[in-house]
Length: 273
Ligand SMILES: [Zn+2]
Image (cartoon, rainbow, N blue to C red; front, side, top):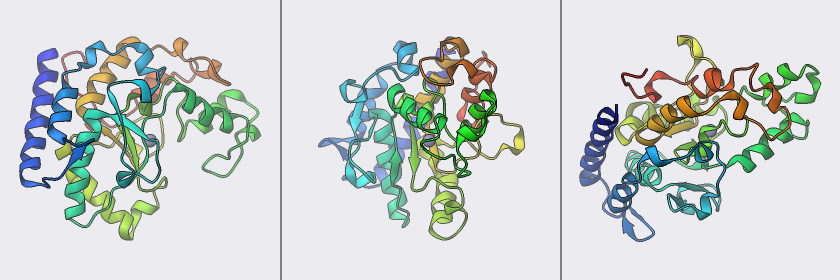
């Protein structure tokens, strides 16, 4: 199992390093070459990450695995990513740019408290759902949670806790259906995996459960793959608590239906699966 993951990580690294040679030379993080940061971060094995980490119960700004995203890659200040993920993103960003594609990070790491804010504003009707309805119009609490879960995770169960997942350019699928947005999505579908990124929330035609399609959400598989396997082992529905509506986690089988309800391209193949 560990050997398989190691093999997979190295495979991605080889592809990424080869790309770096032929790509832009100026890519740096805090003045250090991207490869240096990337390789250093890879040495922090995913196996050492705790359930608290998986559930987003930490402060990215104080965690040495994380780094502040440069404003030239994002639409605002104050976003954090894992260093390995950010290094891979910069490579992908620079390659996309050479093809005339602009990738802009709209959201990155969100810890438990941040996600709790998003969830509870929807739960209490302060922020409308994507359908423009208020969640409070659904009196049945299980249905209310299910409506929010179309596009938002319960705190403790979001991939955005992991520092490996990013939202790019626009939070609606229509944007990616034509013009500039379609060019971005087409480029990502063809090239993102060369830099280690996959799309977890594809359309649900293949029987995937959980969240609706999100063409903006991409995940750094060399780290999120092992983290998903870790979440599968360690995370239980009963651990998802500490916010309004949390009592619905078990009946909706959050871990099985939502955390694991992703596209198979974002899963590592291993004898355990
Ligand atoms: Zn997202």
